[in-house]
Image (cartoon, rainbow, N blue to C red; front, side):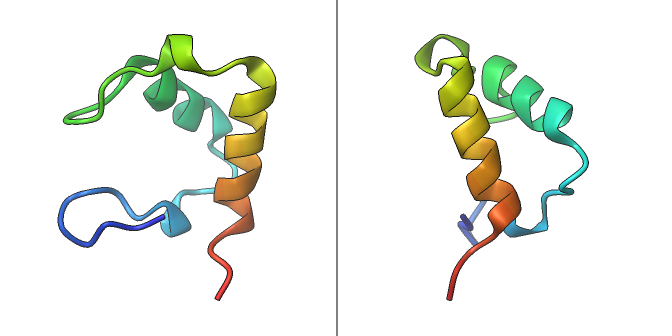
Length: 57
């Protein structure tokens, strides 16, 4: 969930901003390419659930 070199720390992603998450996933942002065609709605929901659950230690 975190790459201290360059990626955004997903552990800090606001849990009330699912539309923002989906938009970035579908359209890309900065160095992240758009991944819109790679995930179905169920898979996007599963990714979002993982992000808001946070990293388990």
